[in-house]
Length: 421
Image (cartoon, rainbow, N blue to C red):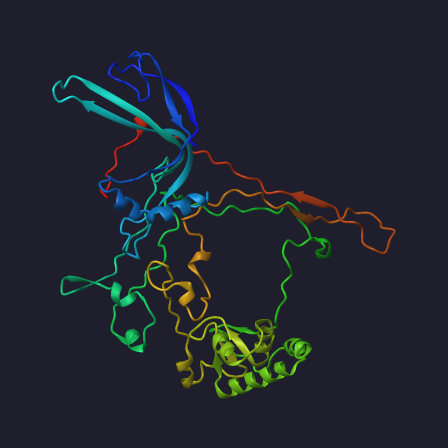
């Protein structure tokens, strides 16, 4: 059952006649039925010629509904929805209290002067998405996947976008390099950047503080005693740390653990360099135990051609010519439910994901700042007990910043050139 509300509105148009109202006096006060329908408005930054194309650029009704269900998400607009490399334009969400009016103007053919205007209030707009508010929103830099050869542009979508698992011949075909990043700029509003030095902060508690009396904000790190080597280091270790042997001996209690140890030892004798995924594919061992077993036989390369690989202790890949075949080949596959692979199709879980980055499709709301307790040095004075004097604590709470964006005056707004959709 639809609940209706009444609202009195005053109009000065002599030819205005409102719907569901009879006997109204032109120029006087009239009563209009206000439907209790909550609507969402999208201020589209283009000239609309086709509603279907507009919904397609917004991702469809389902995508708009999902965006509306999350208040901190921004509405994405793709002017080229079929292009997987099209970067989005983002609209911010605002609360509003507007009315959606439907106005009909009827003119009699026999008497053009006989004009009737009929107005219906369809509902209340409580949420509005704006792509151009007080601060202009800009789309990210666009990059087309084309190859220019002999003055003609050739599309590369069929050659670089994986729609299904391919064999080795697909990757060996000659294709121009096209490796655009997920986003070029993380800011979608113009900013006047002034080159100034960083602000130097001074500690509020100068002096030495007894670390035993300081309450930590995070859990203390539990090292696995692995040895990390950079490509620029002059030498490589030949033996593991004694703590690494002790940690593995402490948890190596089952026969399966001893079998995994012998298996890993045989693997590094057969091949000096292994990746973690390759070790997991050959050795059946729990990941937590694998963290403690690998430092016993190998060290971890941090930079260089063999970065993120485990190298046998005492083996220097920079001195051996045969180690060139073990270099790390890092490549990225686009994961998307609409274009290319999905996450469920990946045989190996990605080490990093673009979803972990701070993309401009969401707004981080202000959350209560945690309070940190900092230890202060004890006051000078004798202490009668064996324990050191009690330490006083200072409660330090980070302050918040409230930003206010005023509405733009209609008289001061400038006309923009908008694309047609």
